Length: 101
Image (cartoon, rainbow, N blue to C red; front, top):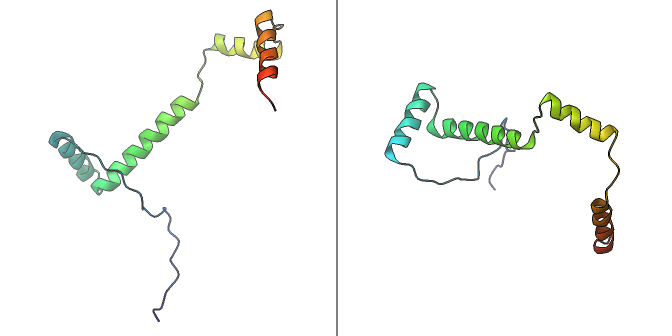
């Protein structure tokens, strides 16, 4: 029977998933040069750059940036919302008719 030792926990998750894509020669050389200058493996350099860009992109799309004027208008509407107009009342009525909770 083989002696199985427990797998040690890692600081980073195991890398089981793959991304596959092709690059033109100039882009490949650029990435290799940057990885070399950073004293990192190309794969580590690419993963770090992709993760940073992905997180930044997600944050940009999940964050709402308002000017001072727009922020004031937003909070004013929350604190003292306007009375519903006929169109909103109709929409609310339609929602109640069409959607079963």
